[in-house]
Image (cartoon, rainbow, N blue to C red; front, side):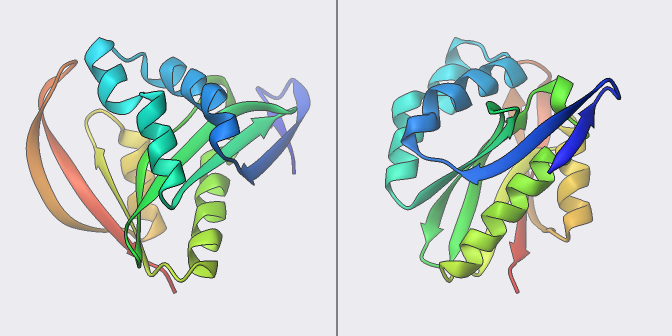
Length: 166
């Protein structure tokens, strides 16, 4: 698929199912997107943790621009019929190209092929307003909220969503 970045040059966007061979690039993107502190690196951006999720029925979808990974979506099975999106992001300079939306669609297609009935994810509207809007617009249903302590912004409401696959 061809798209433009900042209306200045044509770029080639590719979305594909990746694997452990893409972990270093996906983690590089994750750290640039989230700028995590040491505790967040251990909890959310840990290579062995990501590898374990992929190797135990997980999926890593990558978004590339001109062959370079600029986005990722890591999901893993919580049951035989439920896939949970654990972590995802796209570098800011490559947003608005449909990369995340297309990575999500690739995940949904793969889930349907594998008999998965539902995709779940958690997000925080205050911290990730674009993701919150995306899941609402995609038809996800919020099934639970909880208050959590966020190192960067304090007490926030985390929303848990699910999407029935048809």
